[in-house]
Amino acid sequence: MLQSLTIGKLAKRAEVSIDSIRFYERRGLLSEPMRTESNYRVYPVETVDQLRFIKKAQTLGFTLNEVKAFLALQQDPNASKAEVKEKTEEKIKIIRTKIQDLTRILKVLEQMDAACDGLGSIKDCPILEALAADDNQECHQ
Image (tube, rainbow, N blue to C red; front, top):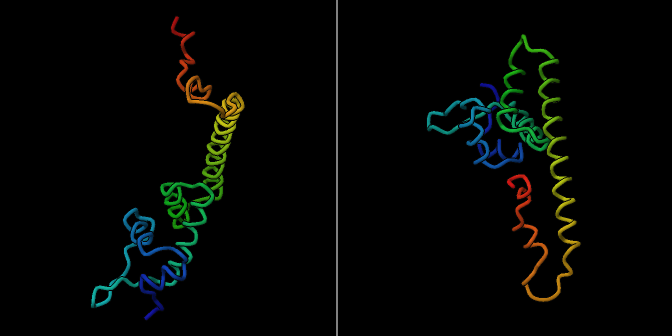
């Protein structure tokens, strides 16, 4: 019989929780494991690499659906590097948009923070006033 791992040993080797492994199974990122006669899950050793792949992809911002698509491409003998590159470039665009949005948000928050000296009562707080302001009021007149 090929070498296999229990779920606990797999979790330890891949540095993930048992719950994560079960979650990935439910989401279809990992194949349903073999079962022993006593119904214990046993996994091929290669599952460690799959779990590390999933975790690294998540760390780089890929969603579980995107990771699942990568895993499917790995198994597809007709898949090309171009398909993987296209998915990566799509993620880069999404991340750049998020960076632009976060940069804009940071600038507004810094302006709000600079407008408040933090002294006195909450009455006439410039931060709260800015949050309550109808910035679209001009558009509706």
